[in-house]
Image (cartoon, rainbow, N blue to C red; front, side, top):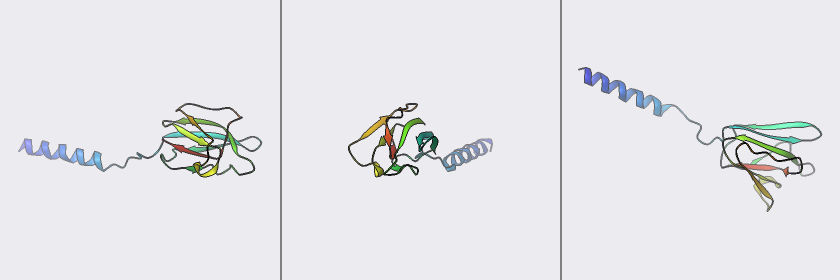
Length: 108
């Protein structure tokens, strides 16, 4: 009887652990950038594998100085839609100066 109760408890614990949702598609952390005269924007726990256009970046005025504080590599692009030949990878914890202009980003 004790073995049956122990087995039931162990099985229930395993089922509970597997039932808890996990955000496996999030880069986890914060991606910061500057825009305009003196403003800072951020993406919190951005989705991995999806191109994200920076909301404050426009055709006339791109964002700049990205800082990758996520657990994933961020590849930033000069063009919207993660298009074009101009891109730059930022490793986790990496950052770039004011001269790096960005309009979109994708996380690995």
